[in-house]
Image: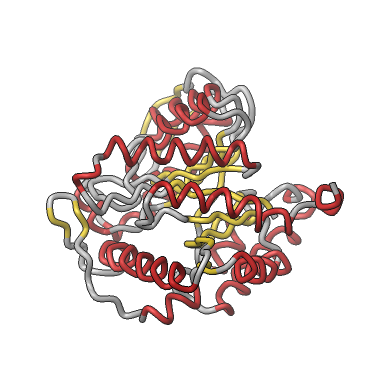
Length: 343
């Protein structure tokens, strides 16, 4: 199982400064690069202070210049917010500047406030995403492309520059049946059960495995990534504090994901949650190194290829960096190939 750090731009205190938030993530990526993490993932969200990253391709380019080997995953780029004829060129340029380390994770957009403030009715996001994805794939793989669809109509054109290599695409999907069909189409998959139970995760993994099996050799290199909030703690008191911080984070996340979308000058209001703090503690990976190893072992046995850990949910930067190092030194070696463990 490979490991990825989600560079989650969480900005609950305006006085901290957006510049500090961004460069905190750069510092986390540089550390992860030196500690043997396989990748980092970056979000795309606009107009709000949680998962705040309006320029993921720009950020990916900068991260590539500051690191040596990390794969950089957009997790996820919101296709309905972009014009595919120009976005395809931006993706190609980013792939060139990252020297092939880009994996383009894409999705439809999950926050009604964000989508509708930017002129995309939430009810249209799935149809817009489907057509945008088809257009993007055509522009990345064919030299002369014309289109006559619902949202795109254009005469033949060629996006320049052309890709220098195939660009890996990852699909963000939670529904098991959707995972199956996206796998059949040749996409890498990122999923999470969020507040769902363990059976949902099993269903998600089985759908991916079924899609790979039904696709034969063409799907042999496809990967399944699982994203979860996680943090290695050093005491029960720190564990309790981290769970409380994660609960506060989710009180804002839920506001824009499933709730009313109430913001005050870009700051998401913390609202009461339906999930209790104790229920949250059961689904996040916050605990001692051994507790996290035990949980991750279950994921590995299920068939998860990449675990994406979001450890930036309100914990101060110094402790976040310590946590990344602790995870690398005390957790990751248990999931290395046997020859590396012996060494």
